[in-house]
Length: 496
Image (cartoon, rainbow, N blue to C red; front, side, top):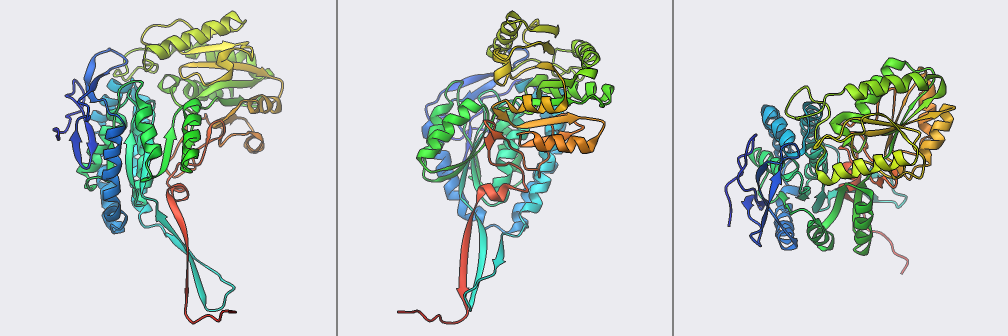
């Protein structure tokens, strides 16, 4: 039975269902779960606790909608994205309030997400007019050959909570602009800002029913929906943004179905400061790159390598800046470090910092939890065997290490199993480009920190940070099939 559209926009929310075939619907089981604020613990609303049966309905709706959407005129698709951009921008205050309430996202990163999403929609509007093929030369006389890109059909998008608006948008808008239909599974931590909000805005902008479908689930119950999406022969592509362990399991299962996936996974991103860098700028960049959205961004700097001549002063200044960052309510525009997403994340951060300290690391800033927040924390002297030095620690904790040279810093950075993003702060940009070429990562920013993204850029990593690239300029490579077509203008002579 269809439900009324949820009236989001700050404050308490009514029950939110799935969005399937253009209608808000409850879970088939009738189950739901409370969506709680990470800052206050208040219940923001009740959310449909879906399962594989609900995902099957969503896939069927997307499959039915595909023929009409894939054949829609470019101008028809373009108008949807332009209208959606206008709607999103007109509701900026509402969206920022929802991001703060649902994910603890403060004003700084809320603005980043909202600006990115609006640019994404506007750039997607031109994607509908991009050439879909090219003429190929043929050595067979009388043959004309073309290569044509065609939308694949139903795309499944599985997205995280940490940049819920931006990452959900990135996962769905490119495929939609190319003529595909989508089933979106947001995180249980961000069912609205990572799912329902996009359904609401795009539907108001004129997206036909069934082109975008959203299925939500209770905590700990993602696998039933994900397995259904992977197994369905109607789902032609899957894109996933999240942790490396989850991405590895998803890729293993997808391989059994010979299903292509795009994976953007964990990062342990290095920021290298060379001896000739502007110290004040390096500190400013590192503070932002390590602690924006309380370190809960896949691109955040996790390890900072500083050449020895600058190291002592850099550590002193960086630690002082970190210790002074205001923490608290994400709805307060002055807040820099808001709450981490849940109690489990807070406990993990504290355990890893305590373990590193027990192994000989020194805490030079932060390190004492203030629930639901964890303060901006700086560690030095962290041994390689510490857990925090090996995997991605998703929070406002960063390791600073002294390097004897920039080349040594690159070598240390390349020892990581991850390869998402990196940055180099240097007084010599040409040297910075040379160092960038040595780094085994998918993204390098010279004289900037690593938290950067633009809708049209090839976003993605190497090694255990995933494969494939997001970005509207490269979406056709991931979400279209390439078909070779020939036509002859004369009969061919066959040898028998």
